[in-house]
Amino acid sequence: MSQSNPFEPPLTPPGDFSSAQSLDGTIGGWARQITVVAILLIVEGVLELLYGLYMLGIGVFMSTQFENILPPEQRNLQNAPPPWLMFAVFVGWSLLIIPPAVVKIWAGFRNYKFRSRTLGIVALALGAISCV
Image 1 (spheres, rainbow, N blue to C red):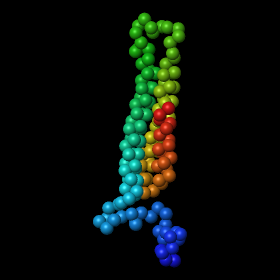
Image 2 (tube, helix red, strand yellow):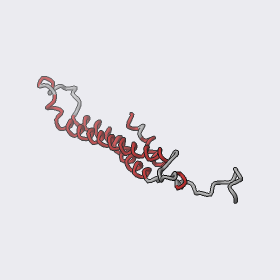
Image 3 (cartoon, helix red, strand yellow):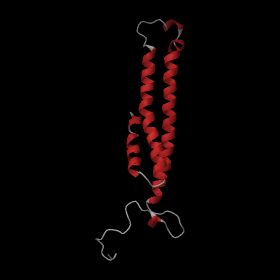
Image 4 (cartoon, one colour):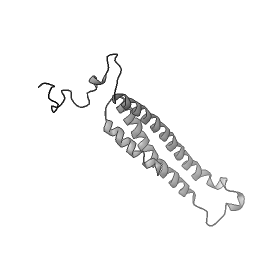
């Protein structure tokens, strides 16, 4: 098995980035971009997690304080939305945001160590849920 045949498969197994290091020990080529995307996944996941927790807090706050926020002349309206509706909307929204955020953080840590790159791609695709 010589490397003179261009149609011969490479000798290194898939996912082996040992050949990606240059002579000075730094990672080169496309392997450098994996760590950048991993760090950005962690940052985006943390920001989305904070937003999801904020929405969860707003849901709890709005369900308990909704009547106190309204002006006094509108507190006894017949067509006012029930307080549980605010809780359901905001908590439901936060439940759509928090799980993909946790997956992004986990995938970012895994990708930083050059593992589970498919999970990173799935986590990026799950980010479309938070755009709804």
